[in-house]
Image (tube, rainbow, N blue to C red):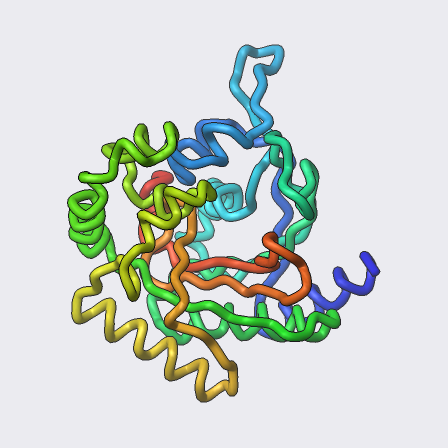
Length: 278
């Protein structure tokens, strides 16, 4: 099964024009603090972080995106080729006691399309994801689709969410009370039932979109319809990493219980710049 999945992922990624990239299992911990966010669960609870002999803080990579952007900049791909379509396949590590169906060392396949602002590339990544899962034998998939908007949208949305939750702040868990001022969107991703109920007690998405971001999202949906890909843009969910902007998605499979999300991703328009690039 391992070999079949890897062969399928590589074959389809290359057909879509993605090239393989391999990054080290060990990275500097500061890379993930800057990219994923200090208030994220990954940084606060889940990273295998330790000091090496040179007293440097290093980490077993918890996810693939930040490491690939680091490599993209370190090897000047932004100067030599600009747009890059890359895929990775390998082990990732999370230190916290795993939930059912999760492992401390897990294997992840993913793609990164860097340097393109088109909504069509969003649809392409999602199409590749769905085709890979189906070719590997996954059935009864549900694609959830949403938009978290641009940074300005997120600032407006954060203010509105904070105002709505303020009367119930004391009912939130300890983690969410500390997140309230630092990163209110963490409450949306909290697994505590009370926090989840309070955060999502209104119909529709908590993200307020400007006309430009709404237009981008409309084009993503149009592209997916033309590709014959069904999606649910009414479900309430949020991705839990700081770098996401605009399009976000999750793919869920039936029959797996509560931990039914088997693929996820989204757009990150500022991550290259935040890690020192243009």
